[in-house]
Each structure stands twice: as structure tokens, then as C-alpha cells.
Image 1 (cartoon, rainbow, N blue to C red):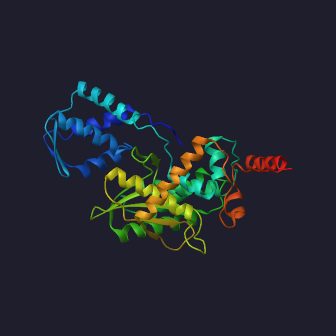
Image 2 (image 1 turned 180 degrees about the vertical axis):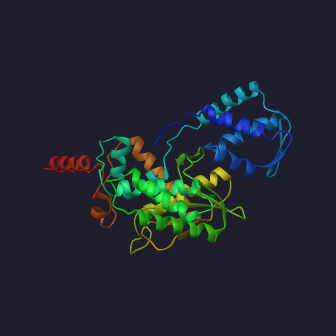
Image 3 (image 1 turned 60 degrees about the vertical axis):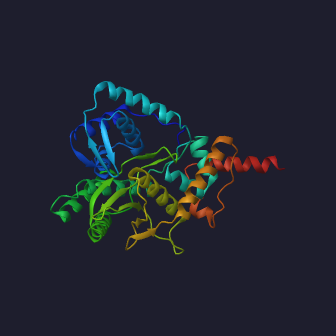
Amino acid sequence: MRTEIEIDDRDIVKIVKTINNHLNQEILIDDLLLELLNKKVPSSDYLFIILSELQEKKIVDGKHDHLFIKESIKENVSNYLKKKLSREVWGKKRIFVTPLEIGKFYQCPRRFYLEKVVLSRQFKKEYGGVWDGEVLHLAVKTFIDNISEKDVDKSINKISKMSMGKFKGKTTITEKSVADFLIKLHELIKEENFNFLTSERTLLSIKRGVMGTPDIISINENGECVPIDIKLGRIDKIGIKKEHLLQNVGEALLVEDFFRKKIDRTYLIYFQADSAIKVDLTERMKKEFMLLKKELERVSTKKIIPPTSRLENAEVRVCKGCHVRPACENIEELVKFSGR
């Protein structure tokens, strides 16, 4: 959670250079956005603020989904754009949260409060699930980054071995299980005809006050954007955990805002599941995510200690393995003592 965003001048330089590279050319805005995503520019809001200024200065012409770059952006204009963008962003100060934080807040407002507002000491286990997740996400990122390699099977085995080796002695999963998961992921990519894939790109929506890093952003041959979220465990008997769904929705909103395109579906892939789960997104789901964000902001600004989780079976689902459980238990003891 952050209360302000500081613009990195390097992002402005990347945008200016990318536009200048297309001098005297017509370019699709979608293609320009892909270039900036690959260059790790976090927000398309930066681009559109800059393009608005460049159109006023007659440096670019915009027509629907195309741009024509008429003149090169000179250094004095670039410096002006940096100042303009800083003013625009600072004028929209708000609390910026991640989809993961929204999911945690839904699970347990108290845990969120202790982790992000009070900054209580957290106790991270030296062995087990946390590190299993690190292995899995490292393997997925490395696989996506190298997916163009011809011998996919050889690449998968190599990546699985490397990922496990980096966290040797800390994990409970096996090299074979990681390889099997990557094979499953590759099958989904082929079935969906995804021709653009990128992994762990941090995105920022100034409008919503949301920032985060989707596991995978994929685009198929029809230009449809489909975020993919990777989860370590398995699907509950009752279905997808609500906190996972909320995180999935939040990441979809980030992709939606970056590309200025409605996202209709996403995928959730559980490490211990046999298949990927397609999630059809609705406006109601997106609205619920933003309402939870408002409630999170209220808790953060008023600094009132919120209640513990009200989820069914919270002791197992939330409290077990909670990194701030000692601090929470101290609060409960204080409440009991005060009530005597």
C-alpha cells in the first residue's frame, strides 16, 4: 500500500524514445502500448497525457486507434512533458493498493491492518509454502521469457531444475511437479493461440489507485487480452477462493486500464489442479473489488483496529500460518483484559 506515486523520469524517456523511433510513420496505439509494456513502462496514463500535449503542439496526429508521428520530440519538449506529467499525477493523490492487498483485506481486515498500517513484525517460515510459491513463480516467469525456444520439453526440464536449485532445502514441491505444471501451462497457451506473452510486468492505474504485477499478460491472435494468475495450492471443494477471485479481478482491471480495452475473461491456474479455470468477468465483480478498496481506505485512514476474519473456518483458512498472528493475539488478550 502506498499513498503517492513518484514518476520515474526513465519511463518518460522510454516513451519519448519510442515515439521518436516512429518518426514519419503511422503506428497503431495498441502496438505502441505493447512496446511500452515490453520496456516496463507501468502506466498507459503516462502515454496518453503525453500524447494529448503532443497533439496540441502538432507533433503527432491522432485518428481513432492510429497515430502519425510528424516531428521528433526535442529535449526542451521532453523536459516540459516530465514537469507536466508530474503535476498531473501529484494532482491525483490517493491510496494505491495491490490486488493482493484487496484479497488479504477480504480474508481478514485485522491482518491487513497489522501488516500494512501498523507494520507489525512478520514471521516468515524458513521452509514450506512461501518458498514453494517463490519456486513456482520463478519457473513461470523464466518459461514465459524463453517460450520462443524450439525445444520446449528441454527448456521446461532446464527451468524446473534451475528454479528448484535456487531454493534448495526450503521447498516441499518437486522438480517433476514444476515441470508438469509448465507443460500444462504450455498446453493452454497453444489452445488459446496466444501470440503475445509477458510475465511479471508491474502496472499502475492512476484513475483507480491500483497497482500490481499480473503473473502473465497474454494476447491472442484476435487482439483479446487475457490475464493469467498462478496459484500454488488446489481448488477448494466449494470452488475458487473468493480472495483469489478478487485478486484476479484486480489484475484484470489493471490490464484493462493499461490497454484501454474491456477484459471479459481471465484464467486461474492452480498448481495442484488438473486444468486451468476460465473466469468470466462481470461489471458486478469489478464493482465489488472497488467497493472493497474504499472500505480498505477507510480502515487505513481512520486507524481504527478492525475485526478479525469473519470467513467460515477462518482459523484454518486465515489464522494458521499468519505472519502477524502474535500481534493479533496480543490485541485479543488486551480486549479480554479491558472487558473484565
